[in-house]
Image (cartoon, rainbow, N blue to C red; front, side):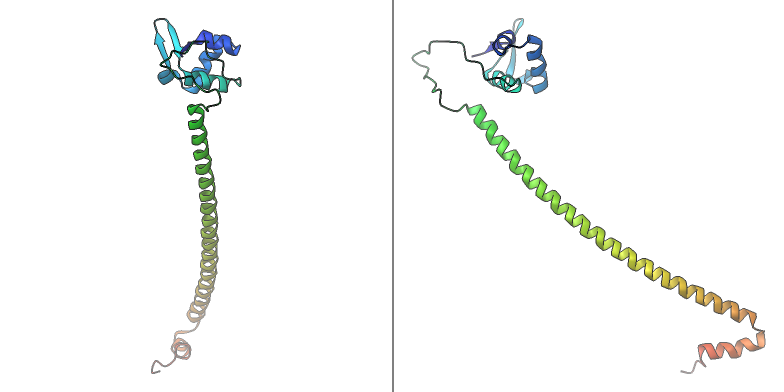
Length: 166
């Protein structure tokens, strides 16, 4: 049974503005709040959501006499909205657990890749240092060759490089 903002505020013991703020905060306005003349009317879902958000029990419904066509609601029967929301919460918890596990796997994979890249970087740095040493050695030999007189260079080069017939 629809109720107004003022009625729900009175039943929950809060100000009407608090109800208005919570309607906006929960995003109930477009679907669960309808405008009838100058009055906003809340459906049962909005009333339940507001009561839950404000930390109160769901207010009792207005005392009405059920018509013979209307079945009497069993007080022990669970609210289908609450059951649906509990199901959604369970689904979201499962999804959260799955995403946490996936994130842990991604982090472990990233750590392995990072370790592999560090190993590759160390190997590349070692190779670069070795090549730098070789280049320095070659440069020293070039300077030594340049310091020799031209008539000794040929003999020395033959000794270093070999005769070429091998």
